[in-house]
Length: 354
Image (tube, rainbow, N blue to C red):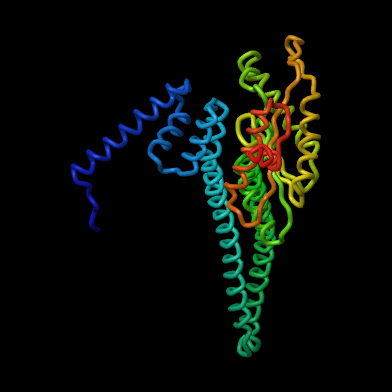
């Protein structure tokens, strides 16, 4: 077999590229004040290498917002690199299922061999054997022994196959758990960005096909960085969890709330017009802003936690990215308008026309 060998010039060029990407990654970590952990370095290296367009777009968007934080890096790492763990678990489970099935098939093959042997003994009950008492007695004795052995093996096969079925069912449950974990935000328990993106694609396709309305709400906790800076990340995490619970509690069964990334949350509202979505967003805004949060260890009051909301209605057939962009623009208009408010597309258009 011929081997493709790189020329010294090609190898040297590749080494220069790798070195340049590595230096750029380290410079980006320093620029944004991020710890040089392996996940953070990996994200910036891939960004400068340009091999993951989705990652590059997400980082560029975060930079445009001026929000490259630890939580954003954690979300990007989970979104673009950690799903590989699901495939590892899947591969491991499939290997175990394969072994279990091979064992069950081996048992059935042994049982089949017993049946063949028993059939051969039955064939010996020819007319000649029936006329020979001694031969007949020998054949019958062997048939009795083989019948007993078949009965024993049949019981054993049933027991092992039942055990194999239990193992397969257990493995199926493990795969479901792994898949659920891969689509769940560990901090809030809501679906994560990966799950949201999948549902967004499915619901926009469904809305286009059925000509049914679909709305989206994006919300961002106001001044979240100052909460982390003043009270610490554990308190910030508690604020995220409480906000997630509040948002999810106000939705209908068909709606989907997800942690969009960092301190942002997203809500998909199937069968919902823009006006209805604005009402849902306003109810959610009030519920979030009227919470009273206390630091459990000190008893200090955090004051009102507020969030800014952007609402957009899907336009059948438009790209998913355009739908997201309109909701994001509405949310940032709410930020620019003073925070703790809901902004929809109609408001955006009115302000532009004015």
